[in-house]
Structure formats: structure tokens, C-alpha cells
Length: 167
Image (cartoon, rainbow, N blue to C red; front, side):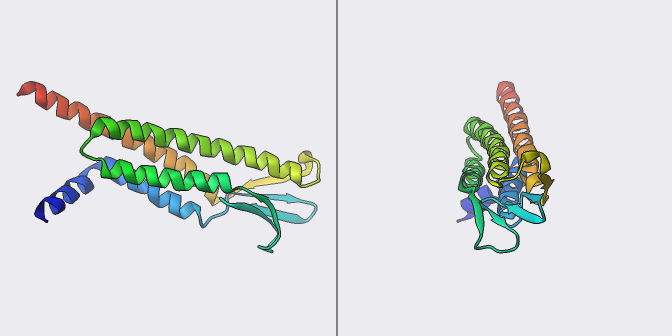
């Protein structure tokens, strides 16, 4: 039991664990905030991770964006796996790069779904006002946190390797 507590305290002390944990927390927060809103002809369409709704009526769904939500869940699971693999730094670096790639794909999917939503609105895309909401910033901040986690894992790995050379 004391070994588990020692491992847990060591894992929490590392800055990359904090950045990976932030990726998870930002992913949880992304489920509760809208990503974008589209306004045209007096109607507002709100896009979140799973769908785009018309106005304030949750039952009126214009489009399903399930791919973005699923990608967010995958990012969170992979970040959790990276946290738990704190003893294997080389694998943790590879998983961190995978997280960066997945978040980049998620941002690309958000852009793709926004174009699809504009085409589904039966209005010329030139007359649609697109507003970014708080949820659009969260993947970008997650991307930055994932990059910083990989940076500090590499730094930690270099430090351990240099200490091994001195022995």
C-alpha cells in the first residue's frame, strides 16, 4: 500500500501530469459549453460537441456532431492512460504526440461541421453570422497543455538519461 502512495505522490509532483490532467478537465468542461453559434434571419443555431440545435428548443436538432464528442472522449481516455504510464517516459511521449494529433483532428472536425451546418441552414453562407463561444477555446487550450506535457516529459527524460550517464 505504501508503494502505491509513493508512486501516486511522485506522479502528482511531475508538471506534465498536471498538464495532462488539465487536458482531461478541459475535455470535461467542453461537454457543458457551446462551441459556436450561427445567426441568420432571426434564428440562432447553437453547436455543441454532440449536435446543433435550432433556437432554444433542444428537441429541434439541425445536425448531429457526434464525431466531435467521441473524439473528445477518446482524447480524455488517452490522456488518462498517459498519466498512468508515468514510469515509461518514451511511451508517454508517443501518447502525448497522439493526444496532440487527436486534438488537431478534433479542431479540424469542428471546422468541417461548421461548414456543414452553414450549408444545412438553407440560407446563403454569406448571410450567416458565426460567433465562437467559450467551448471553441477549450480544444485550443487543451492542445497547448498537451504540447507542454510532451515538452516536460522530454525534459524529464533528458534529465534521467544524463543522470544515468554519470553513473
